[in-house]
Length: 253
Image (cartoon, rainbow, N blue to C red; front, side, top):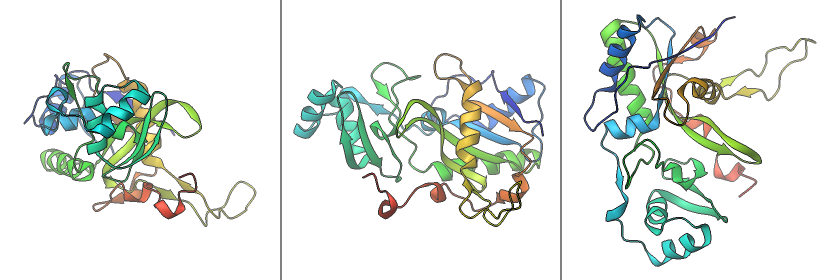
């Protein structure tokens, strides 16, 4: 099996109201690429948030007493801390330079997923309001335009429990299921798999991150081509929810 990871390098800086689907088609055309059936497009959440006009103006935020207290503990600006509080359902853990929270979407991550990179000074991008809906709208526009059957993943850069470093992580999806349940299949020694569920949306997001980069690469969209299990997971109604572990099973909280 061969998988190709293709970065779209001609997408301009995104502004509110920009149609990402059109930018994707134009960039692909400039690179001589046509979208194929079973292509999976991974799109950086910052690009989605900016196109939807979902930006935080930090200078307009008035920090609460709680924000000022957490800012003192973490060394973060109190305005940013207040934004994190406002985007969170729950503040889970505060450390010397981090805030772990559960976002309103149910994601447990650092700083409620708020990102200050790749935006102008004084601005920050939170996780889009409904990443699944954003992914669906982009997918439907692209499929209508070219008649191909594709999937869209909205990705974010997040850390992991008990591991250093950050990786690409799926926060929204449309067109395919985010988990591949392989229970019941046989391994090389003919033993039946009992608990094997593969977080393919996260794996694909991490793979895309190798090309997308985290600094000034300027590649907010990546095409992943050649994923053999696409049809097994094809779904018009898939959401990211299966990847979110229920709080009652979160033994670390």
